[in-house]
Length: 140
Image 1 (tube, rainbow, N blue to C red):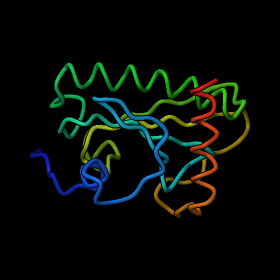
Image 2 (cartoon, rainbow, N blue to C red; image 1 turned 30 degrees about the vertical axis):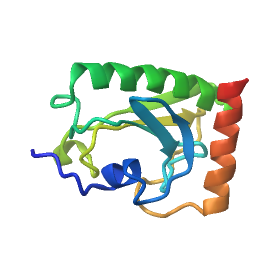
Image 3 (cartoon, helix red, strand yellow; image 1 turned 120 degrees about the horizontal axis):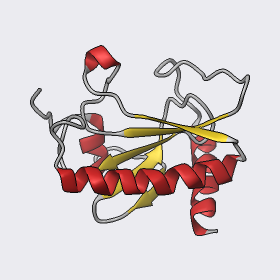
Image 4 (cartoon, one colour; image 1 turned 90 degrees about the vertical axis):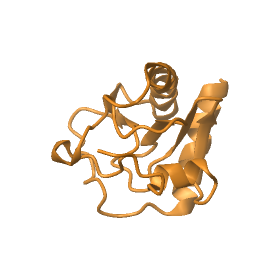
């Protein structure tokens, strides 16, 4: 699949669309999923172009997984969740809907179902508050 520079994450990286930013460095960006499956559901993307794990450069992938590890710890701390789920999908058949490499970090508790993904947008004030919770955990 050819990378589409018009995808939503590329547009966020260029500043054309807003996001509730949690973390940013030279190689990666982490922000709130606007259609979260749980509170503090966070996305981590590389700043380099690549549709998935296979066609993203090794350097970009390494930077992205390092940021994913950092964000997973912060989401766990921010929410008090006993676990976190990290998801990365490749191709529409696997459920990928945005064709820019990204990792989902979702806090998990036993016996609590996830919301359906891409079914409803969260209120901006909730996303902002959740981003602040994760940022505080990163700083703490």
